[in-house]
Length: 202
Image (cartoon, rainbow, N blue to C red):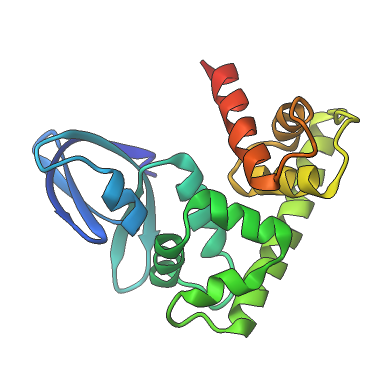
């Protein structure tokens, strides 16, 4: 499985980027958000990738951040959401907004994407909230980890759930959220938590 590609950007369109590595050009289908963050043709770039294999085709998808990649991988597990629909959704809302939408249950935000009606939007929220809850509980039980006891308030709970959607472990996310003022809006809590987690990884 390809984890990422790094090399010279030799071609860029709205939802396509071609990265040349060791003389091979990797065509990565991507979101408008990733396209906007890439530099000009000739710049050195890295994309985190997902290889999608079907009977009739093989496609490579690339993302500027691991958070966006994780959101993409979660979206394509939802029944009725394929890779193209997932790219369209993540082109309309960024990874942080996507995660917060799942956490808050405000499915209406997804209906701004062409082809995503109210029923599909609700299914995305319900299936992913359930998936996140099950995975986080299972992983923490398996690891024998004790959760911090200071996660209180709706904003903190939403922020914690959003961080899980972005791919962070429950203990990692809870540790960061517990250090932030719980009276702040959930979006601001997420931003500060991401900075704390990033600083801990350096």
